[in-house]
Every structure is written in structure tokens, then in C-alpha cells.
Amino acid sequence: MSINQVNSGRFQGKCAIVTGAGSGIGKAAAIKLAKEGAKVALFDLLNDRTQSTEAEINNIHPGMSHAFDVDVSDPVRVEQAVREVAEHFGAIDIVFANAGINGAVGPIEEISIEDWQKTMSINLNGTFLTVKHTVPYLKKQGGGSIIITSSINGNDRFSGFGMSAYSTTKAGQVAFAKMAALELAKYKIRVNVICPGAIATNIDSSTEVSEDLKEIIIPVEYPEGAQPLADGPGEAENVADLVAFLASNEAIHITGARIVIDGAESLL
Ligand code: NAD
Image (cartoon, rainbow, N blue to C red):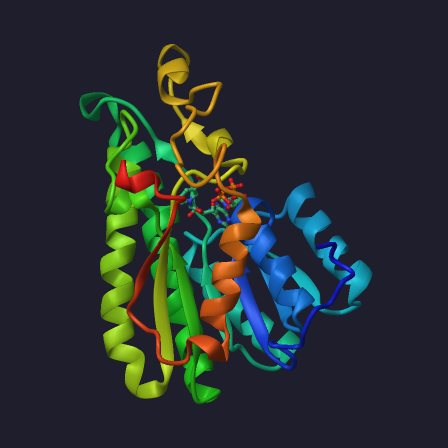
């Protein structure tokens, strides 16, 4: 479906924050939410991709989208940007904490503490900070939906050589989401965590890995049959559909759920 086909107003009058909205899963989710009526705040490192996502959405729905230059690992900036969103759009109802990097990849004894901490900072601290600073606004609205992007690598399938740092953050996000769901249920704030398998995005470009390991870690060809349901990796739009469902009232009784979306990859 093209962006100019607005298929329903499920999110009419709602405001969403999407982190990592400049590319891949975040971009697809931002477009999906906007197509269905939401105003969308795009949190990402300000770059051409983020600005083109903003332009793409505003081209069809003027004023529906605004890009904020936010490093999700920066506590001061996240707090400030969330406040800016509330001022700009009036309220916050939906939060998609999705920004992430592959980060430090390689044998454990070769990962520096700096690279390890950077992976934790963006994937794990970034999730915590996004949720921490948006919760007061969701409470003000009398409820809301938070969706966190983990990975099958954090739970169902520990695959991929050298992914110890990434997998640690992804498992941590699942635990965090479940505790947040428990804590926030009384405020009608739902928190769910999604675990995609391989999805065709730009994520490999964020992998910090030495040249000699690159070929082993990032295969040029996606292995045939790795996702029994599909011919190759999933599409970002598949994940965006799940995000929209979890953000909507159709998921009103779903919280604390960990939902795998991987074409059966983790069953192999
Ligand atoms: P992507 O690289 O296409 O998009 C990630 C976005 O996050 C980029 O726009 C990037 O600029 C942004 N980002 C990176 N660091 C940031 C920071 N410090 N602050 C703000 N934004 C930052 O990758 P993607 O595949 O769309 O990844 C989105 C999420 O999905 C990640 O959490 C990733 O771990 C998860 N995931 C991806 C896959 C996959 O196969 N692509 C599988 C499972 C989980």
C-alpha cells in the first residue's frame, strides 16, 4: 500500500513517539501509524534518512510528523525531546522504543569495555530512558501503549557468532518490558515486547566489527530456508503491522506479552 492510501483512522487524534524512526522497522512503523491517523514524533540521530521519513509523511499529511534530533542514550536530550513532543503535539499516547544497533560484535575476549558499554547505552539505556520519560505523559492521558523492539536473539534463538553484547541487551529489554507491564497496568498503560527474526533493514551498517570477521558475521547472501514461512528475511512493514496492532484498542487486553515475528526462524 502506498503512503497516500489512508486506510482507517484507528489512531486519529493520537500522538506516537517512534525511536529509530529514520530507517528500517522504525520508519515503517512511523509511516503505518501516520497512515492510520497518528501524529508521529520521529526520534533518531538527525540525518538525511530521518528527514526524508519526515518529508514522506508530511507530504501526504501536512503537520503529522516531526523529526527530533535525539540520541536515545543521552538522558538529558531524551527528557527534553519528550517534553518538546508534548508541547508540539499536545499529548503522548503511543511509544515505540525501537532504536537499536548491533553494536560490538566479536569474540568476548576482544570486545572492549567501551564498545560493550556503547551497545548497552543505546539498546538498553535508550529503552529505559524512552519509557521513563514518556510514562508521566501516558499517565496524564489515562493510559497508553508502549512497544519495545527486542529480537529473537534475546530469547528464542541465540544465533550469530559474536553477538554477546547485542543478545544481552535484547534479553534485558524483555525483562524490562515485563516488569514495566506489571508496574504500569494500574495506569492502563500496556507494555509489550516484540522479537523479530531477520528483517531486511540497514542494521548491519551499525555493526562494529573488524574487517577479517565481517565476512563470517555478516553473510552476503541470506541463507536459503532460514525463515520457513518466507523466501528471505521479513519486511519492515510486517513488523509495522504488528506494532500498529499492539498500539491499537484491538490489543486492549494484551500487556506483558513477548511476541515473536520471525517466519518460524527460531523454530529451526
Ligand atoms: P536500522 O539500522 O535500519 O534502523 C535503526 C535506526 O536506529 C537508525 O535509523 C539509526 O540511526 C537509529 N539509531 C541508532 N542509534 C541511535 C541512537 N543512539 N539514538 C537514536 N537513534 C539511533 O535497523 P532496524 O533493523 O530497523 O532496527 C530497529 C530495531 O529492530 C533495533 O532495536 C534492532 O535491534 C531490532 N531488530 C532488528 C532485526 C533485523 O534483522 N533488522 C531483527 C531483530 C531485531
